[in-house]
Length: 124
Image 1 (tube, helix red, strand yellow):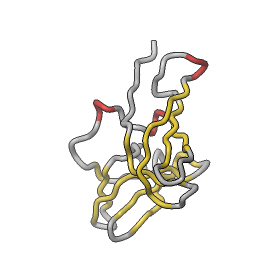
Image 2 (image 1 turned 45 degrees about the vertical axis):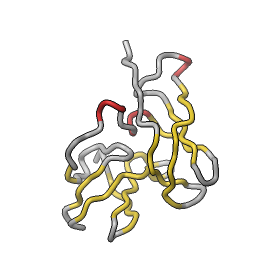
Image 3 (image 1 turned 90 degrees about the horizontal axis):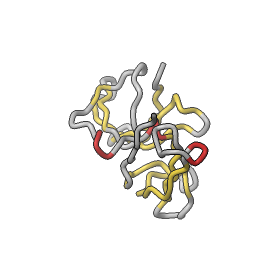
Image 4 (image 1 turned 60 degrees about the vertical axis):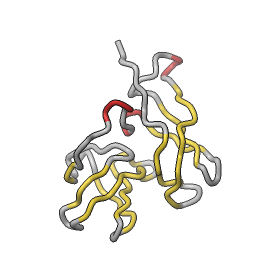
């Protein structure tokens, strides 16, 4: 039986239409075949600037109750969630996961203060 899933509703994410990081709000969820909303569902987030929606898989979103307290160190073998803060040893700074590369869920977009938006590999 699938468990109910409630993702974080407000995130700063990369909007592929505006081509920049904007505040986005959860618009709606699309449950698989109209069943219970779980990690397999798709979630639409609405951009606060252009008002277009961007879809994300539930596996890429943090649950409201599962926001990590500590910053995880980046490793290409790990899976990271949108909005999660990570530390990159090579850049020697923290960054926030702000999106996935369009069409490739194994590449994440991370916003670093000095390095800017960087594409990183995950789930290798």
